[in-house]
Length: 421
Image 1 (cartoon, rainbow, N blue to C red):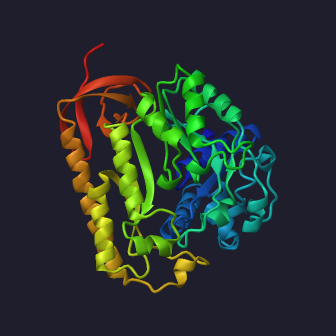
Image 2 (image 1 turned 90 degrees about the horizontal axis):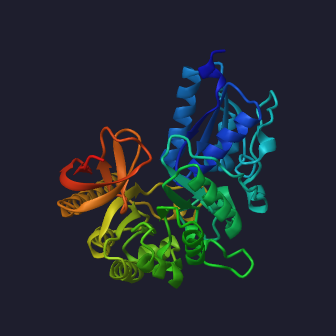
């Protein structure tokens, strides 16, 4: 077996939390002496993501016929038997097991399946400290897992269990380790990030955690938050955006729809007015802030007027970076039993949202012309500005914070002039 075949390969789908957990898996499997192993860390947020994972498994087996393929993640947790039935799969592992050191000390020869989803609700294996996120200049720090809500379209609570928070001191210790390893940016991630602290003594809020990290790590140049729920953002978190320059001026919001009746049928906890007011208040506190958002097109019972209100939300909230999901019925969810919108209409509405999102991004990029921005350089000749805008940085070493003057726009990224150092 050559060196390439001996290493542990991890293929990650879905959220940034999965990405952070994939690095844990990679390190634990290597520490356990595993070789010739390919781990597929799946996502179950849509049926398409599950399909892509199955497709990747087949492709990986063709490419590495001698490798043992282990499947884990939310899709494997929710539908273990389907993955276990694939001839390419040697082992299926549950979410609670995948970040345990003992899980990677060897495998039985027969196919094993993940525990029932309910087992994940009772168990919470804490991930060990990471040294770095392989292939990334930004460090993704998982501080929360699971979800206590019951959105009618979502299967993630079944795969991740209830909300569980990592203690502030554990988070701080891991953040310090990332800083010491040279990371210039840390991204706090979780399934339901704004629920962090609810299960800890005293029920601290996310704002307090953000303040703690910035206070105790003055050498950290940039702290970023991943996706949050606007209705759960606490006052201290909002104040931090106004007062902490090192807190990146960007938020990705879990909005899903711009229509109040659809939001109720989704069992979301915010209204359209809540979304608009939240964005307006954050922009007042931090004028340079940019917003991204998740939007679902063609949710059951959505009519043209409802779809129009979601479309208008892009302008009303001032959204810049969109993740548009055509509605995908997930087995066992209430939304899967609701009256469906015709597939061709769903596709058309998704295309309309994406088109509006592209126009909003173009306006945002054009507005940066002539400005000086700070950029964290990444691999592939690209980088990210403080507000998450993509920037072309050819010939720049990854992992550096630099400043550049915006001189143009190319596709979905900024072109900058970087002074010679």
